[in-house]
Length: 427
Image (cartoon, rainbow, N blue to C red; front, side, top):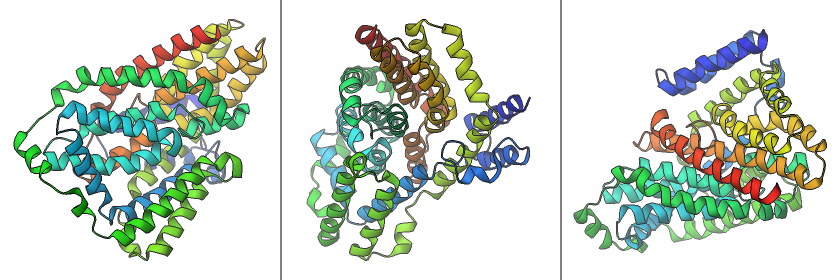
C-alpha cells in the first residue's frame, strides 16, 4: 500500500511539473515533505545515503562547476566564443546548430555532460542574442547531444559511473562497447535535427553582417584573469579524466577546483555566487527525496523485478526490456537515482547469465536505456535541468512540453538504434 501511495504522490507532483501549473521547485519541496511526513522517504537517511536519498556527489559537482563557470564568465570568454561560432557558421541556423552540437558531443564524454552543458549553454545564449534568434532550439539540441555523447564513456554521464562501479567495468570497457554505437547514433541525430527544428530556424542577414564585422578578441575583458581561469579549469578537466585512477570523486574535484579558482583569481565572491543556479540545486535535492520515497517503499524495485520475471531465461528479451524499460522509467524518475536503485536488480540478472558476453550485454542495455532515456523529458537528466535553469535565467524559458515533444522522438530513435546494436553485437 505504501508503494502505491508513494507512486501516487510522485505522479501528482510530476503532473504539476509537466503542466507547469506551479513552480517546479515548490512542487518538489512539497512532494518531498509529504513523502517524509508519511514515512515513505527513509527519514534522516535521505541526507546520508546516495542510493536512497540525496546524492551529494551530484549536488556538489554542480555547485563546484557553477562557481568555476561564474568566474570564467567574468573574463569575456563566452562572448568571444559566441562571436567566433557565429562567424564560422556564417549565421546559418542549421550549420550553427551542428557546430554547437558537435562541440557538445565531443566534450561530453571527457568532461561529463553536465559540465559541458554549463560551459556551452552560456555561449549558445550569447551567440543567439548576437544573431537575434531564439536560443531554445539550440539549447534543446545541445542537451540531447550531451546525453548521447556522454553515454560513450565511464565519466561522460553520471549513470555510467554508478554502473561501472557496480559491474566492475573500466573506462576502456565503455569506450569499446558504448562509443561505436554512440558515434553512429549521434550522426543519425544530427541528420534528424534538420527536419525536427526546421520551423525554428531563422536567418537575419542584417544581424549576421553586424556580427561578421565584430572582432572577437575585443570581447576578452581581462586577459590575466582568463589565463588563470583556463589553467585551473584545465587542471579540473585533467583530474576528471584521471578520477578513476586517483579514486577521487568528481564532486570533490569540482569543489577543490572552485576553491582554487576563487583563491588564485581573487574575484568578488558575491558576484560569483550570483551565477550559481540555486533553484536548480534545490530542485535536485527535492527530486532525490521524492525518488527516495519510491526506492524506500520498493516501488521502483518491484517494477524492475516484475519486468525481469516476465522474460525469464530469454536473455535477449531481458536485454530488450532493460533497454526500453530503462529509457521509459529513467525519463520520468531521473536517470541517476533510477540507475542507483535498479543496479542491484541488473547485477542479479547478469550473475545468472550463461556467459560473460550475455552478462555484459545486459549491463550495456541498461546503460544505453538509462543514458538515452535522459532525453525523454525535461527532468530526466541532470544536464536537462541545468540547461533549462540557465535558459530561464537568461530570458529564454523552455517549457516542459517544448522539450519533451522533441525528447520523445530522439529517445525513440536512439534507443531503437541501440537495440539493433545490442542484437547485432551480442546476440
